[in-house]
Length: 147
Length: 139
Image 1 (cartoon, one colour):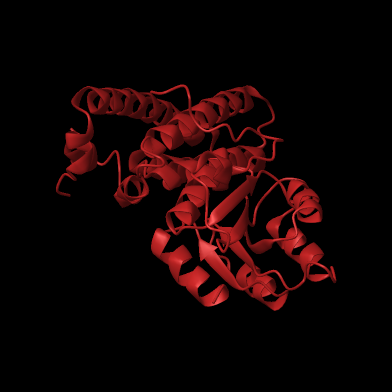
Image 2 (cartoon, chains in turn red, yellow):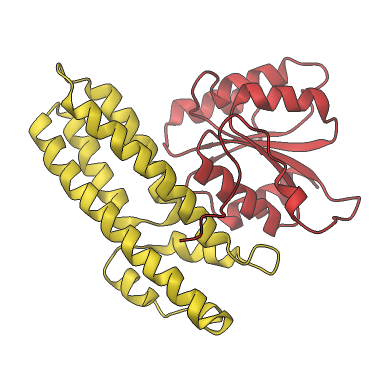
């Protein structure tokens, strides 16, 4: 198998969109957060195929750092279960910030736990997607959230 | 060749979903994702191997490690691996070390077999070129 794979290594902020051709100015930027390099690559691929610019990071902490720098994030899609800061904790931090609270946040999880889903939606999450995330889920979601 | 991977249960629909994401901008998307998977899964398998040696056994930690592996396996459509991960987690729930060890041996075998088969598949794709990639085998 190819050794020249994705360079989304742990601890790094990687702008996946930089590998793509120049995007039209109106293209929306989505921030993807997942500690799994495989899932980051998959969600970034799905978003890119839907013509979104994507920046993928591996932790909630990195996400907040990036949100401090980039003011044009249209949506955040984050895994729920991450070490140090869960997706729920990231969601809370965003919704408690006067600068960030209007950014739609979507949570992903591999586990269908009703209490977890309810908790996230009540905290202000736009949606809760079960992994493995499908392109049609993201397409439907983005149409609704980013109209 | 791809059809046999599906027919034998190594891969499921998720793999097709990944292939649908390949385009001119990312012509090797699936191979890149699979490479990431085997990089991460090899590390996780090593961690679980070491964790199984420890006494007393921490079944919660084992379960958590295996959960990571299961999620990644699901994301690339590695069906047999995903099923074996589920089996292992069930043994963790029952705190059956013997069951975990047995299941883990099967999982390592599936991991190794899948790696070989996918390496061969991607090598074949590189040899055949775009024609093979354009044809989606029947399910």
